[in-house]
Image 1 (cartoon, rainbow, N blue to C red):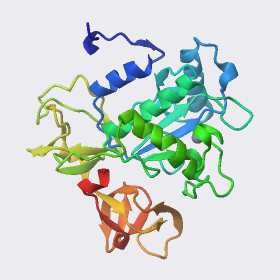
Image 2 (tube, helix red, strand yellow):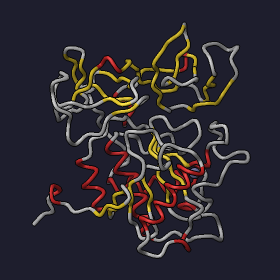
Image 3 (spheres, protein in one colour):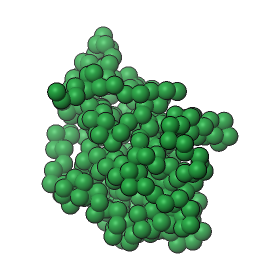
Image 4 (cartoon, helix red, strand yellow):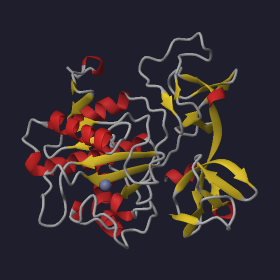
Length: 343
Ligand SMILES: [Zn+2]
């Protein structure tokens, strides 16, 4: 008998869910995510590392990371969405409806994966089981969000400096996810060693479809926004949905009475009053300066590379503001996202 997800038993403790890659694939196929994801971050935990792993202490290790992040770092929750352990087991962390605390300045629209271990040369040697789960989980997210298998959408922490600027590892960046991570932590190592495995898992190099049913994108402007089963406050909340949060970019499939339908297949609606429309663009410049305000008199706070996707919520003259952050780019180097961008 095929496993029926309704009765799928998943072990949970301290608010985390523990899954094999197979169970994760099934869980994710049923999971509704309001946030639009355009980047998947790869990290290693560094500490704890393999010698802290006893084979059955996943939950305790996850709890200790949660403690470190919330108590020592003062974060609202554990930083990562998922931790992948040496035996290939996956544990959930932060809700997918929140941005992670993964790469400073680059967490909007991102998913953060912490790969348990210390993968610098001479340290932990990654197991086959862990490799399979890292590849599989990454691939499943590429498919779920129609992300190209590309170093713009699959990123290593090492490629960003301490100020959140992408410099592809030039300078004193962290080594994270480790200088032996799938043969190395450079962009070329990722292209040579990691991306082909992701493509192989999905049995394809690229995606031929985008979700053409999306009519527009909108960003949540409330701290918490409930998802309801119809286009009115009197409709009950959707049972298989978490509330959406400030800054999340959602996909709109239909509009009715100032309500947005945010699921293609289900009657899941939010009030549009607590959102602002955003537009999805692709960067066309080789390297585009990001500034802290809408003119060249504002300082440069980073760069975005060609092919990267961004969400714009405000346009001031020719300057475009990114996702409600203090980040602005010149509109001459952006073009509207279209269906060929997922190919
Ligand atoms: Zn990292």
